[in-house]
Image (tube, rainbow over all chains, first blue to last red; front, side, top):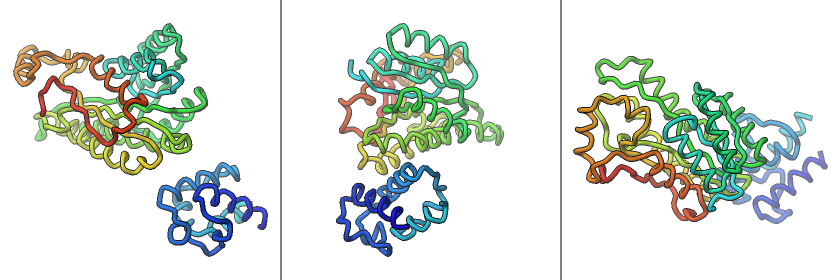
Length: 77
Length: 247
């Protein structure tokens, strides 16, 4: 769990240029981290590469917070 | 050469305008994947010509209206070249008929290849181009998509759709340095126009201020320009290459 969060956090910090302290589980990509729709699509793409998996469009639409992403990845493991 | 080091995929590249586009991109230095749907021998000829120019090329069969085949084609291109900088959506068909006689299948076939095909190919390359932070998408529309044309309700609707799709894709992808433009050819000498009766051609010439048909190279040159770094501030546009027919 901690390891997944760490890797997800690094991607978010790199991609969105936010401070690590802002990347909380309840943080919304769009509302709290300043991402636009395309940023979220890109984040999902990077998560797919980082964790070597495919996230369907339907599932991707449900990922809106940091916690959503982390638990999605953990559930697949 | 303005396209040295670039990798391109051209759909419908075995004949006509698409063939000339593939060759011109190669002349300008690009490596080119040559898509075809039926004419494998013709596609291989184009591949050989591109290789003779010292560029890398391969032929890839794909029906652009089939999402799975499109995904495979794009993957094959990226695997082969290691990247993809340029997509030219050129594949197209005609099934002309007067609206009142047009069969549903004639409508569906043309919309599926000429419009849905552009959507599928564009969607499939976007991931790679977004990662690269650079990309060029050039859609071959048609001047009749702007002006309308009797007997071509399906074709005109598809081409007008391509122009709208071009503008929306341009807006969605601009922040990732991907430009998307359309070219609207007028009457160009190809297999498609060769089939027209002489009197129809004579009537067409009357509508063209430059009083001649265009050639595939007229479209290919503009495509190469839009694919180059020199066009980096142009996006969402539809360029009319029609001898002044529609202004």
